[in-house]
Amino acid sequence: MILKNFLYVDDFVICFRSKFIHIAERKLQLVLNKLTTWADCYDFKFSKDKTCVAHFSNQRQSDK
Image 1: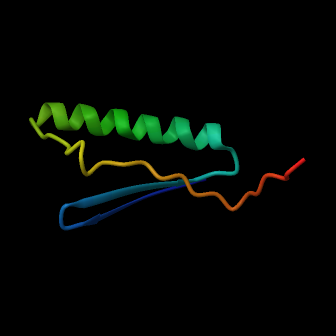
Image 2: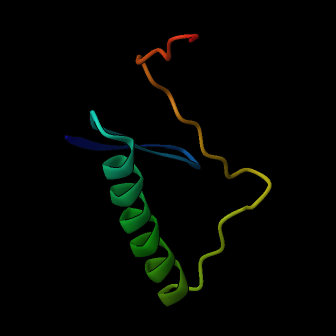
Image 3: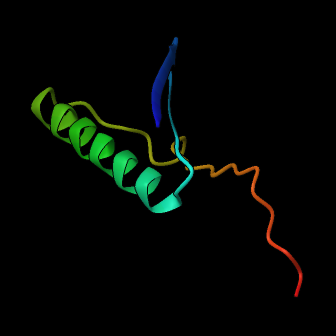
């Protein structure tokens, strides 16, 4: 399991790698909760129009 983040100018990316999607979802949700707490504390607003989630996987499902 690897958690990474990248910041470039006004873009922030959080990446988490795991063999199990439920673990990755939980870990990312915990990070998002912490970011929300930080943003509330410093009166920072995330742009809903510029915020998105992308899920990438190298696992393939078989067509049965």
